[in-house]
Structure formats: structure tokens, C-alpha cells
Amino acid sequence: MTPRTLSRRRVLRSGIGVAVSLPWLQAMGPVQAWGETGKDLKSPNRLAALYVPNGINMADWTPTTEGTDFELPAILEPLTPVKDQLLVLTGLAADKARPNGDGAGDHARALSAFLTGAQARKTDGTDIRVGISLDQVAASRIGHQTRLPSLEIGCEAGKLAGGCDSGYSCVYSSTMAWRSATQPLPKEVNPKLVFERLFSTVPDDVRVRRNARSKSILDFVREDSRDLSRQLAVDDVRKLDEYFSSIRDIELRIERSEKLPPVAVPEVSQPEGIPASYEEHIRLMADLLVLAFQSDVTRVCTFVLANEGSNRSYPTLGVSDGHHWLSHHGREEEKLDKIRRINTFHTRQLAYLLEKLKSVPEGDGTLLDHAMVAYGSGNSDGDRHNHNDLPIVLAGGGCGTLQTGRHVRYAEETPLNNLWVSMLNRIEVDVETLGDSSGVLSNLG
Image (cartoon, rainbow, N blue to C red; front, side):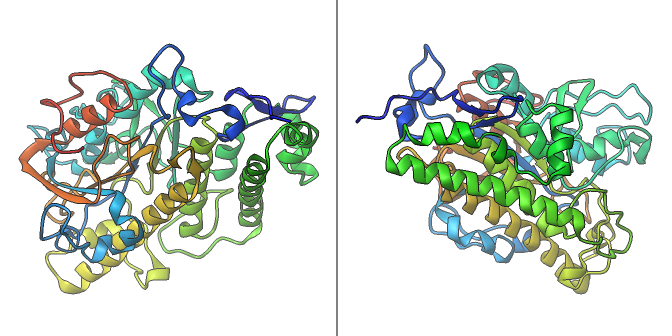
């Protein structure tokens, strides 16, 4: 018997409102059918932006040669398994992260300008203003194709009011996504709440009962999943089992993390309900990002690994000093070494995410083939607070629109927002400008 064709919108449901979206299955037809109805059929192209604070030890970040014949420096070395799907981009600048007459406050401006290319209004009051961010331009155009227009996550809570950096509101230092010039989108740092958002049709009373009985969300849709499995070919059944296993693994890790005592970390408060281990926290969030893309719940995500100006310490790396304090290294070798360790830790987490995306097959490729993942910081050298020659990596195939496995050097002061415009064009969002962009970025593919 030939299995009947499934809609890509098919979800598993229970009789009490629980819904679980499905990954792409062969029974849904060619993966190209995930494209928007009425347009040329294409694989869905996802967009993610990841941010790390306080700049980078650039001497151990920047490759010495251009093109395909380049070696990954020490900080980028963890990305070796996915080197062929990387674009290391050198020479990009975020002019609106500079003072431009506003004085101190480079950390607040670095994050607020990163995806907007706009100058933040210097205020620690409620009259905040910056600009719409890359992700929200994308969400406004393609968000209707998925259940969630976008997903905003992070690993460090931040205040949305009060002053945090030389007269700038705390919202600038902790928020990357801006729906409009005056409307920031706070990130969610609790993996459990992100998980619930991905399955947001679960009513509050059901959620409470399920948590009380330690019952998996999969238990609620088990009958529907059995009915579905009887309609599927063997390969689809296997893929569905793997997908369910990933969901259950995340549930169990969230449950374990809530039961473990917090790690004593100097100068760092551990938000309630998140893993005690910072690395586990990042990886849980990365797994949720993969799950969101795999199930096509959203195609747009921002992920702030730590707030700009973060003074988190890294005792597991042998670094008890705060990150921000170390970033003012004054070229002292001991501090530079510790910054290098922190920077490398963060790229290990990026490698984890990229390898997870690469491990998920989809059609004739993988999730990583059908994604664009930008990673970087709005500061270059944290000691100088400079915003030119930023540390930027773009990973993934972009549905065949990116020629990866290269180090590309651009002319100094090339606007970072030229990259964002180029990425938007690759998800069929035709824009000519964003923030301080001056055009598109050449030589990407």
C-alpha cells in the first residue's frame, strides 16, 4: 500500500489541546513543497543570529589567508568539523555602535546596533529608540508561514528598564531583537518556557497537571502518533521515532536541570529554572533552536549567549575573573589567554549547534544546508571598544545560495548591515536597505 500524502502543516493532537508539530517526512512529498504556496517551490531557508559579548581576542580569530585555502585560528578551531560550511567574514563594521557624539556606552550600542544598524537614543528612561532588527524584518515578511513568526532566546537574563551602561537603558545591553524602533522583544532564558512556547497550544491547566504527574508531552499525543505511524513508510517511522526521542531527551534534561543545586559562581546569579551549568544551558537552548527549525515552528531565531558587558566568570575554564573585566586586558598576556579561553568556549557551543543542524537530514540535504546562521559580536577588540573589523561567521548553505568553506575579506568600513540585507534577500525578503546598509554584500555565493 502506498502511504498517503501528508500535509506539511500536519500536527499530532490530543483531545485536550496538546499539539506537536512534525518534521519533514517523505510522506509529505518533496522537501521543496515546504515553499510558500504560489511561489517557485523551494526548501525552507532558516535564519538565526547568535551574539557573544565583549569582543574577541582578534589575533586568535582572524585567518591569515583568504579564499578556500585558509586555516582556522585557535578560537575558530572547534568549528573544524563544519569548516566546509563556514564563511569567515572580515572587514565588516557597525558604525552605529560608535559614539557618534554620544560619548561612552559602547556595550549598549554594540548589541542594540548589531542587527539594526541604527543609533540607539542615549537614555536610561522609557523613551528608548533604536531601529527594527534583521530578524523582525524577516518575521514580518515570512512569519505567517509558520506558527511562531520568530523565536528570541538567550542564556542571561537582563533588565528592561533602568541604566546599565553610561546613561543607556539596560534594554539596549540585553536585547537583540527589535520589532520596531521603540518595541524591543525580550529574550526567554528558561529552557522549560521555550519548550512550552514551541507547544503553545497546551492550556495552562493541562500544563500544570502534566508537570505534576511528570508526564511527557508525547504521552498526550501517543494515540494520534500511533495512527500516523500506520500510514508511514519504514524510513518515515524511523525519522519520527528519532524526532520524538529528541523531544523526550530535551524534556528529561530540563527536568534534571531543575532538580540540581545551583553551581556557586562568583558574581553570577543563577536564574530560577535554568540549568546550573552554563554550558548545559547553552546546549539546551541550541537543541530547542534545532527542534524549532526541524518542526518548522519558526524559521527565524535570535540567540544571545550572554548580555553585552556581561561580567560572568568561567570557573570550569579556570577563569574566575569576570568576562567584562578581562576584556579590558591592556595587552596583558595572562588576561588575553583567559579571553581566548572564553572565546573558544563560545565557539565550541556554536560548533555544537552547527553539528546538530548538520545531523538532521531533510530532503536531499540537512537542516544546516537549509539555514543561515550568523555568529559574532558588535565589539571587535574589547579593550579598545572598536566596532570595525568585527568577528563575524556565517554558517550553513542558505539553500544553495552560499558558497561556503572560505575566508572573505572586505574593504574596511563595509557596513555589517550589508550582510543582513544579503541574508534577507536569500529568504525571499526583497529589501534594498536596512539601518546603515549601503547595498548588498558581494562574494557570498
